[in-house]
Image (cartoon, rainbow, N blue to C red; front, side, top):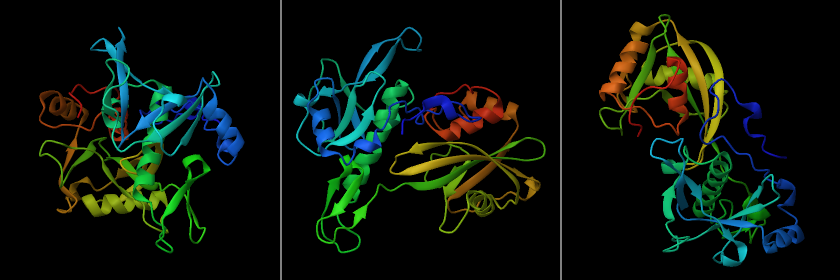
Length: 319
């Protein structure tokens, strides 16, 4: 089934890593003849990825702040390095895209092309390129970290054009891992926003609360549990806002708003979260603009949740 891009955007709008507009052509993944024909087609393009990085070329763009915008550099299949082939899909022109993983990126490609990570350029890429690189990075990491069968311990091999690993010994099929995580903008009756500082973060960095969904738990239950664990508060209402993949390494971020009635009981757990603070809109704007606090970058759903609550963009150098 085709990716329908912005057809299903929610209250948060167009999230940076949820802009895929390429038809993933899942029906071709087991069709070896069709895959071979697609690979040999001169219009087919190949994205070389290595540890989450790919080549981009900065092109002039008068709309952006620095006058340029990165574009993914892809190769014709006859110039692609040897390796496994991951089918990414087909665009509106009928061009098919594959990703090929490499231990290291080639030393030079396409003149001024430079290697860049998805974190670095994801928010600046076109919808097509953002979707392609997000898909490729997610698959590449999964293949790198799941080379052996968890059932019998023998090596696994790539199947279904990169979307399955099959054990050569016991035949078990393994599918790409995706870990659901909830992330929530917590507000009180005065519409203040709760932000926390993680234990591994710089002292100025603050963001909304988040955590992984546990086995046998609904998303709403996960929101309530995480807020109680990390901030000592009781959630009274939960609203779903949107989602985006976060392949660092394999999360799906599910965004919510959550309301609490007991803001005075707030306390950081002292383990995952070292500090929690309530902000009015005016306080957050001042703290962000002055550099008193540093918010998550524009690529994150965290920033989208914060700016949705605020009512517009917040001035700050993003991280």
